[in-house]
Length: 114
Length: 109
Image (tube, rainbow over all chains, first blue to last red; front, top):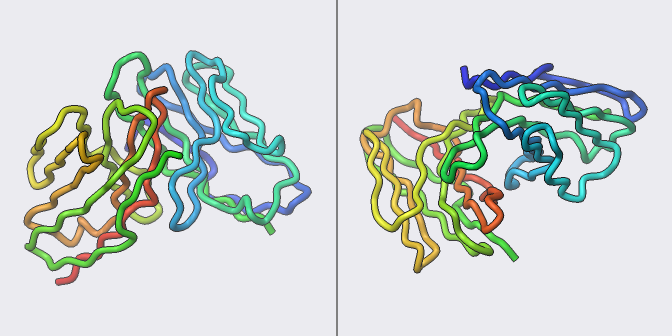
C-alpha cells in the first residue's frame, strides 16, 4: 500500500472511445503527476499539478486531458487515442517545496488501445 | 540534452552482491533517487543522494559522485525477492525528475 490508488488497473478501449483514469492520494501531498511508462523506455512525465494548478505539460497531445479538482484527486481523460498510446500510466504524488522528497507512485493503469 | 544511462539487464546469484551503475548528464542537479519496481507494481522509493558519498540502508547502499556524474546502487545478500527493475532518476535545476530506462535485475538460485 503506497498511499496512492489508481483505478482502473486495466483498461481496453477502442480508438473512438472516451474513458477516464482516476488517481487518489491519501498522503496529504500537494503535488501530483501523470507519467507514461512504455517497455524499456524511461518514465515520461506528462503533467504536473502543484496545489491543484497545472505547472507542467510536456508537449502531450490534446487527446490526453488532465483534471485536478483538489490536491487529493487527479484524473486523466482519454479521447480518440492511438495504438501507440498503449502503455502503463502511473500517477504519483509528493510534498513539494522540500528538497529531496520522493514521489510516491500508484500501481498504474495498464491501457491497451485496439 | 539531458540523459540518464543504466544497464538494461543484469543477472546475479542469490546471496551474492550486485552493483547497478547510473551515469547522468542533466541541466542542474538537485539530488539522485533510486526506485525499485516489481513487475506489475508501483515504483517504490529506495534512496536519495544529494551529497557525495555512500548512504547505507540495510542490505541496500547508494553512492554518489557529483563531479563524475555517477551513482551506483549496491545490493548485498541478494534474495529472490530482489528480482525487479531498478530505476535511477535525477532531480534537475527545475526539480523535475529525469529518469533512466531502468535495470532489470534477475536473481538466480
